[in-house]
Length: 258
Ligand SMILES: Nc1ncnc2c1ncn2[C@@H]1O[C@H](COP(=O)(O)OP(=O)(O)OP(=O)(O)O)[C@@H](O)[C@H]1O
Image (cartoon, rainbow, N blue to C red; front, side, top):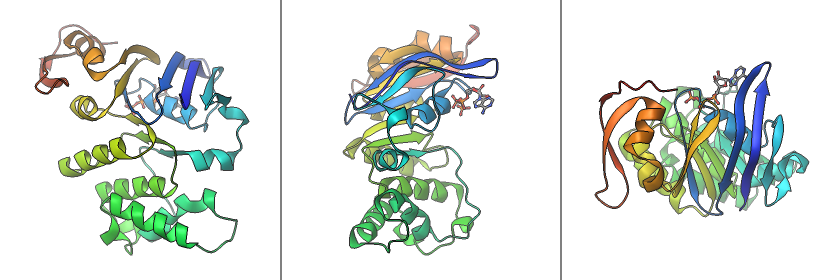
């Protein structure tokens, strides 16, 4: 295990946002994080990234409490791409991606050959090389999303945490991104709304509802008609053409979710 949350709860004011979550991510695997809006996916990703401290329970990286790992060391290991990332700075795409190199560089050190190579490689992997000289604020939503993922790849993390990385992408880029994440030699946790994408590309799934884990296991184990009905309030038919679940939604269920 490289990244684990053990009995983690996170409370804000009087609200319990995450309640007794235990998640273990196999080294090198892609874990899909599913759940309806507001179920706690983004909150859990922030705890796993060490950006927030749990109210109770522990988050461990290679068996060590993440709270005890220095910011710079953590930034060399873990990259998090949040849902909406904006910058007020007037940067080019190449400059945004180069920000991913910050944990590897001295404070004012010039870019090394390794930095340049990492940025070029990250741009190529995300099909963003042609955007390198464009100003960030002129990009479309999907282009920005690819560039933010390129920034995370330039960081060369061993743990990659992505919050709905495909929500602005066209279908070809959705597949290309998930294929890329699956092939990279990283441990990945990916929050997703597209159940079929999750079923196709993730090694394991965790489903959250109201801050609790309601299912965990392989896509075939987790994605059942009952689960989709009880968690999302949707009726569906699930086939397994290639062994992995394929979900066809047939309508809103009469069974209330929540
Ligand atoms: N800083 C905060 N202050 C108050 N409430 C918060 C805060 N952060 C999260 N929440 C609440 O915690 C719950 C979980 O939010 P979170 O963003 O983790 O859900 P999510 O599963 O990622 O949702 P979505 O699919 O809509 O992105 C929501 O009810 C949200 O309103």
